[in-house]
Image 1 (cartoon, rainbow, N blue to C red):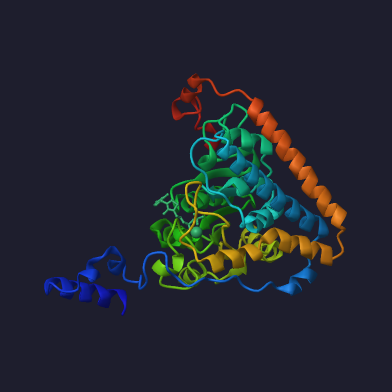
Image 2: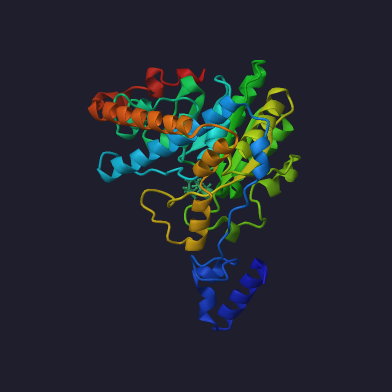
Length: 380
Ligand SMILES: Cc1ncc(C[n+]2csc(CCOP(=O)(O)OP(=O)(O)O)c2C)c(N)n1
Ligand SMILES: [Mg+2]
C-alpha cells in the first residue's frame, strides 16, 4: 500500500468508525509498517581491497591517518570532559565517521572554504584549527576558537577557511553557494565544500542549493554524510529513494556518486576529482558517503532504536583500524603508526590542561563580536 492509499484507507476507516489502530501516528506516517524503532539492519559495504594500490601519495595517507586519530582522540576526550561536567550544553559526536573529514581536510587548500553542521568537531580539526582552540571552546574558555561564546554547535575558524558549523538543517548549503559565488566573482579558483547529513536531503534548502549551484556552475562540492539516521529515524523510512543524495543528483544535472565513507582512500579519490572539477570551472558535485555514527545522535541519546546487529557490523568496519591495516599492508612500519597515535595523545592531553587552566570569559564580552560593534566585518 503506498502512502496515498494508506491515507485513504485511514480516512475511510475513521469515517466508518472502524480500525482505531489506523489513526495511530505510526499508521499515519505511511511508510512505517513496523512499530517505531523496529527495522531491518542496513549492513556496511564490503571493503574494496584494490584501494591498497590507489595512486595516493604516502604523505597524504599518513596525514589522513593522523587526522582520523586526532578527531577520534579529541572526541573521546570531550566525552570524558562531559561526564566530568566540564562541558555545558549538548554535542554531536562524529565517532565512526572520521574518514570523510580527514580526506577532505588533506586535500583542501588553505584558502578554500568549508561549512559543517552541528556535528562539526572533525571538520574543524581537519582544516587545521588547533586542539587547544577547540577544547577551550568546548569548555567555554577565553582560549576557545570563539572566545568561549560559541560552543560545540557553532565551531568556526575563519583563518582556516572553516566558515562555520550550522545547527539549522540545510541552511549552510545556500551559504556555501554564496562563498563559491564570491570566489568566482573575485576570479579566484577557491572551492567551497558543504558537509551535511542524509536527513538534510528532505529539506527545501538542499534542493534549492543544488539547483542554484548547477544553474550557475558554482565551484562548490556538496558532501552528504549518510549515516543512515536523522535524529532517531532511519532515513530509509521517510525517503522515496535508496540513496537520499545520489539518487536526487540527476534531477540537477549532476552525476550520481556514492562512496564508502568509512574508507579514507575511497573518499580521497572521489573528493580529489570533485575539487579539481570545481577549481577548473567544471561546476558543482554532490557526493554521498556511506557511513555510521558509533553512538547516538547527541549526548542525550543512547541510540537504542538501532538494531544491535547493525551497530556491531558498522563498528567492525571502523574506518581507523581499516586504515591502520591498509598502511601496514603497503609497507608502513607499525612504529610509525604508534608514533602518530602517541603524539596525538600527548597533544590532546596538553590541549586539555591548557583549556582547564584558561580563564572563563568576562560577562561583558556578550556585547562584543556582534553586528553593532563591527563583528560583521570579517564577512566583507
Ligand atoms: C530546519 C531544521 N529542522 C529540524 C531540526 C532538528 N534536527 C536537528 S538534527 C536533525 C537530524 C538531521 O539528520 P542528518 O541530516 O542525517 O544529520 P546527522 O545528525 O545524522 O549528522 C534534525 C531534524 C533542525 N536543526 N533544523
Ligand atoms: Mg544522518
